Length: 280
Image 1 (tube, one colour):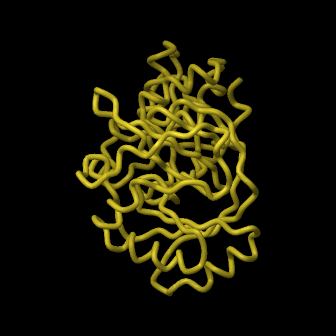
Image 2 (tube, helix red, strand yellow; image 1 turned 90 degrees about the vertical axis):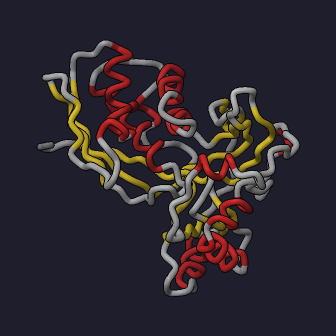
């Protein structure tokens, strides 16, 4: 068991917009997006082990250990560095699976950052980002640790800070398959690319939103209601939807007014990851 292990945050992210601007010869889509972290998310208890074993104490339903991103991140880091230490990992899961909030990617990034310190590896941030990309396209931004304009498959990152905002985030009862959305014949894949100089608060849209709406009616229902209250969008490939408000009180008022069957939360945007100092 984990005894007296520290708890480390794994924050959610929003895609403030998400444009599909092309496709590579290998089939991967080229994206442009802005990532922003929230002051809400999962958390991890992590403790170093001397015997080299990676032990996961909080299995997710239906996810074998070898597919769990926390276990994979720790194993990848150990193999990459030749480290002889191990780790106990326990995940406290608050973010929905298949929600577009980056939960699994954030969990993996926090494991990389924390074990980089606990194992005294001192890998630079850039090397951890490269490792993170092997786990998933959203992992690098959590290691990068700042609100960012992202290009490529999401791994080419430049810091960009949106205006302060509080967000109403609604969590429709749907688990969206990202591969299914990207493979859909109706997906727009030719939105014109922009430069970072063109960005502004409220810019853009989410090209994946029409497909997710068509495939998952609850996404459409939650999004349609939230659009009556503000400039609502879907994050990532869904299913979660959000709207930005200038202050927490306004966001809390909108959240309180939601139909009773709609779940979600209110969170503030944050522009630096709480574990930013764990890599140089």
